[in-house]
Amino acid sequence: QEEPQQEMEEQPRIRKAAYQVEAEVERRRQADCAHAELEEQMHVRKTADDAARELAQQAEAERRRQEEKETARMEEEQRLRQAAEHEEAAAKCFVREEHDFAETAERDRFRNVAEENAAEKSALQSEAERRRQAEREHAE
Image (cartoon, rainbow, N blue to C red; front, side):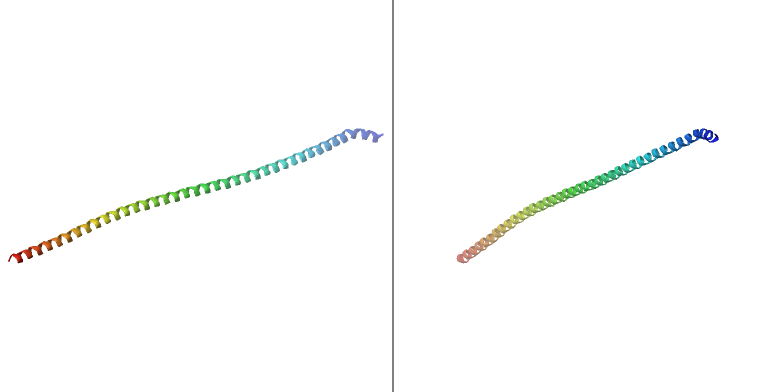
């Protein structure tokens, strides 16, 4: 009789132990689920971080491309501006040289006319002097 009595006395302890085992199994299952969920969240976060990093790199590369395009545009504008300034200076120089050439040509023409007039005057004076001399000689 003691065995059934002993079994009766141990049953609450056995039930308690079984309940504790079931509770521990459930706690571990929930812990495993929580761990798996955490790993999934970490994977999602890493994937999002990787995507964000990739987008940031693409944005930086695009910013650099735009900056290079802007720099190239500004350099081209500067080159065109300098070329236009050079052409304008060359045109002014050409106009100045043409004006100087025209002035020099006009001075040369006036000088030639003056020299021709002086030569003609000298020839006329020589002719007049020769005639006066001839008249004097004829009068004597």
